[in-house]
Image (tube, rainbow, N blue to C red):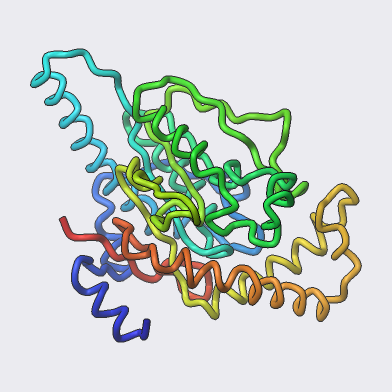
Length: 318
């Protein structure tokens, strides 16, 4: 899709807000974010400032709060209409985007800001990495080199989890993925317990393409009450990916227990070549075939500039 075609698509169902206009939509928000929080929220090689949180995420949280209020009102109206006591269900937010686009940071910051709302809601965050098939199964299926592609996820397990949340099940244990081990941890779970808001982050959360041999009638996004796509120019994402790979090579990959320890002794040039090769062989086709086409299914698109900071926001018209 050319830039002109994309602009035509976006100009239809979306309203565009520049950064200056967006930050003035903050309204009554005046939350307490401390500098110490930044270290916990941002990812490797991804800058994050108090200003970014205040100007981008405070208005975003305010907007989502409006949707949550409407969600609660509809729930109460349904209880009155059906004259039945219905269980309180979590408001579910999906966050999608390319590898290295910064969606994990977006998810963590949003979780923090939403938890500071006046109602002090309990906000849980789940990444779909935990629903990847274990490496053993990926090897059996001969798709270990396609980790991150739709067929590498246990979509049935992910759908069962979301269905349980939207059925009023108060607790659920989800698998945990280790980037150090590059695999699902066999003896560790993440317990999701009575969330008011559930954030589900992953490259695959807005995808609707059925896996080969399956005829899916239900998709992950069917359970979302609001969805966000973290967007950036591909040339910037490639640069961020290569820089992140080199930073990991110099740090986490030095750990002998790391799956990627084999890259630890590479030179910077070798690291750049390897990251570029991985991008071209795996991440690029996945982006173009499976991730990027889902952008226009999102309710809101955060467009980042080359400096990682959001430069404009697209919001789907009601």
